[in-house]
Image (cartoon, rainbow, N blue to C red; front, side, top):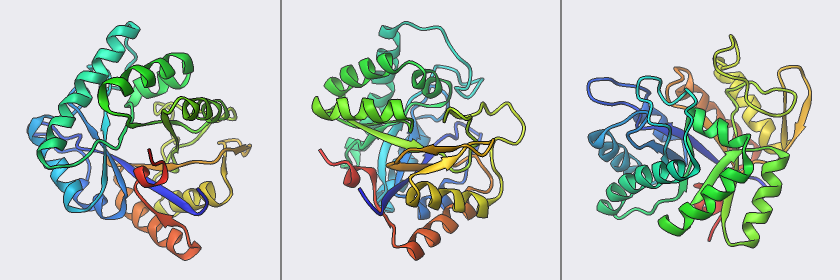
Length: 261
C-alpha cells in the first residue's frame, strides 16, 4: 500500500528481576508490538503488563516466539525437527493469546525471534509449512519475514491460498549485498545513530529499497519496519521516524490495517 507503513518493535523481553528495553517509552511511537512469549525472554507477569500497555496505546499485538534458549536470548541455533518447530510456535503463541483474550484484543501477527527468524529466512519451504500449519491453529495471523525478493514471491503465493505474509525491514541493522541481515556478532552492524536510523527508514519506504553495507542497492517494498526495544537509541530513533514520515506524508498504521483479512 503506497505511503503507508507499520512500525513494529520487539517488546516484553524483561523477565523476573531483569529489565530489558524501554517499552513504556517506545510504545508511544509504534503501531505494532511483537511480544516475547517465555522461551527466549518474558514471563507471565511481563506478558500481561505488555499486552495492557499495547491496549492502552492502541497498538496492534503480535507474538514473538523463539527457540527455548533463555540463556542465549534466543540467538543461538538449535537443531529441532519441523514438528518441534510448529509445536514450539503454537505453544508460545497460545500463551500470548490467553492474555489477549483476557483484554479483548485480537492476535494481529506472528514474528519469529532471533536465530529462529534468521534460520527460516534461509529455509522458505519450512517457513511456508509453518505458516500453513500455524494459521490453521491460531486464526489466520499475519506472519512477518525478512523483506527479500524470494519472500515477496512467497507472499504472493500465500495470498492465493488465503494466507498473509508481511515483508519486514530493519533500519537499525546493516545488510549483506544479498539483502540478508549481517549477524549481530560483527562489530558495527547494529546502528546507534538515531538520525541515521530514521533516514534509512524513510528511504526504505519512499524509495522501496535500501543500501547494503557495501553500498549496493537492494530493491524491495516493505510492509513494516522494526526497531529494537533493547537498542538504547530506539526511543529517539522512533520519534525521529514518526516525525520524518509525517513530513513526507507517510501514514503509520498497525499491520492489520495494511494487510487486512
